[in-house]
Length: 249
Length: 120
Image (cartoon, rainbow over all chains, first blue to last red; front, side, top):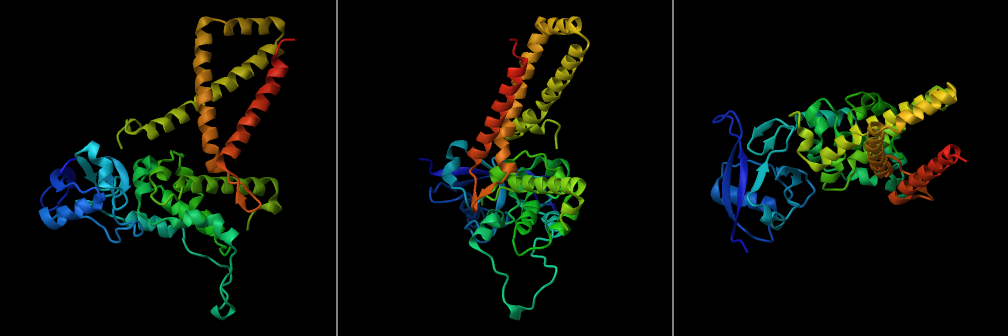
């Protein structure tokens, strides 16, 4: 069994270089480690200048997404042992995002897209807190629960060629979250979100490549959410044409 | 994005294959319309159309087209459960049932078409 393993890590220090370069590090091979542990070893023991995001180390915060051997990966969720046969392990920042430094990308475009779809419960009339909560049955929860597991790790954006080709595309996670709220029995904001997403840059930009679903570490299935959204939009359009009284408000 | 981005990953290549094979769906639709037109023009025109279809070039073209069409149909039926969520008594109908029903529908429609076209 290997005693060390090579990591080839993308470095970009804007004050020193105009383009990213690669730097190789030898780290101890520990079969208990995940990729993030190896990066933290580099940071703590070999090169304190290496910059990357991480926080919870347990697949909840969504901070440590990076390209590992060309695939968007949550580095706290994959064991180092999975990559022993493909040494050196190539680690790069998430593709299709501007790089700020080393493995850290600029998330601003994603955050703008996320807020544009209003991912929160919208009510026509808010009832005062004294009247109690909006209740929901387990069956109603089950309808949207899968889509609510998104941790905003942005792996799906990095996997989606449409995001690379059309940077204005709203993207998988934001549309999946919009669908999560549309399917929530307590929400009444589907029409507001449809106005934003029923554009070419919205759901119709998706060509259903499906790689967003393949890389999602929480099994959210953003590709499925987008296709369901398209079906809902198409159904709504047919109803408005054929049954003018049957279209949604 | 480089022009050849779709060769970077197997998934991307499969996607492009699925999308491009839709051209053959259109080709077969046009072919069917031409066949109906030949039928409307009388027995001689129809016989000439059928003879043209029997030339080696068109047999090869249609064989490739049929393979592409089958690939397109199968890949779309594989994708269908993602686009259609059906709930029965508060339980989501499994993906294989939805895909399977599409295959059954395909077979029924094909059988009906074959029944009409099969020479008696």
